[in-house]
Image (cartoon, rainbow, N blue to C red):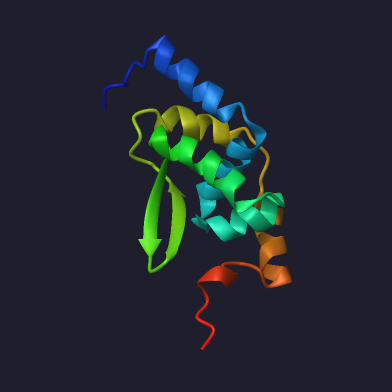
Length: 118
């Protein structure tokens, strides 16, 4: 398999995107599982519009995939992105965020927005 060479401009844009703590943490979380906007709101204790702005930037760069399920939107890491190997390399050096997901599970807030109240 031939290695893809990426330009300085593309690399700079990606590194700028990942230089934000919230976005980098989001990607680390998405490395192991998809997440709903409501979960990010709970995890980061930020407003839904603020979370949506971060996700919009990641989505615009095609770093994350968006999947709709009814009224809910889930995000996952785009492993088809041309710079995915670089993203993966960076994320492999970042500390685990599994404790944050575990907190959601223990507090009963993991995907609560998506549970049908029937």
